[in-house]
Length: 219
Image (cartoon, one colour):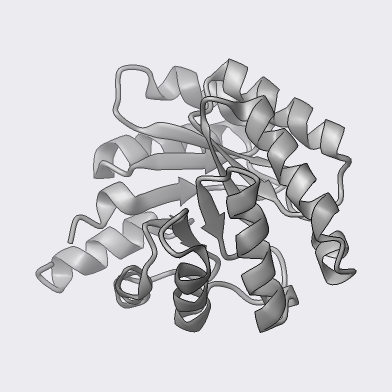
């Protein structure tokens, strides 16, 4: 199991300093993580630190509430791509989903997909706030809007990734999108369980601990 390349080494804390982001990037290079995940104001800094490496940059958009206007999300996504982001992790319009306004949710995602093109967009569902039916509908909206991934959680909301949710999302997308598990993944055992359940990517601030755990376990 090549777990390092699946890890998106993450620091989205509001108090994260430029020095913290530089350290995040250096750790990603040292451990051969697939990407770092940062807020949009740090994309350019991450690009400069990662130059010459194989580590990509993911950037969150509309984070962590998903309640920004569609225009604001699209503009943030376009700006991040221009500065070097290879992937966009947008937060779904959660309140609209709870209200059953799936046309709004789908268009919101589609506009970000268009703004980020040709880079991939992941849609953060915030599964801890959704019913099982809403999780299914959110996955379907993301696929219909052209998103490349659906993602479990921000890590800032209610609950995080669960094996059951990853399995459910994999069934809902039916191979038409990939799965990113994020939120509460702090050790190798949990990371491996998410991958076994169907997760293609792992969003975590504990990447170093996870790969060190893998080495201890002989993986």
